[in-house]
Image (cartoon, rainbow, N blue to C red):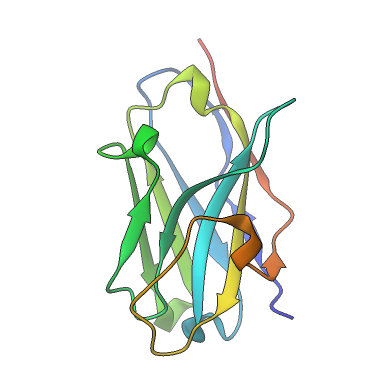
Length: 125
């Protein structure tokens, strides 16, 4: 099972930016998803990227504001979050599923087998 470690969360004012990182050895053969869970709410898919980095998907609420990318040489996937809003406040998780040489990814949590511990993002003035 892949050991995923997230970092980069924190407290930011509305309109600000954060970049989350998800790191794991052997990550290059996995599709990666970023998910978030706010208190009292279901865990939702935010963005995902195929193992080859050729395809990304995002939920409508973050399109135009969040960008997912990966650097397989550094075994790291990034989530650049711009124009943050208070409703983006949540615990953010990265997750991985085995998809070597793949040009697809999914935003449903049932597709993912390995999960990180999460990093907290709080957007507040």
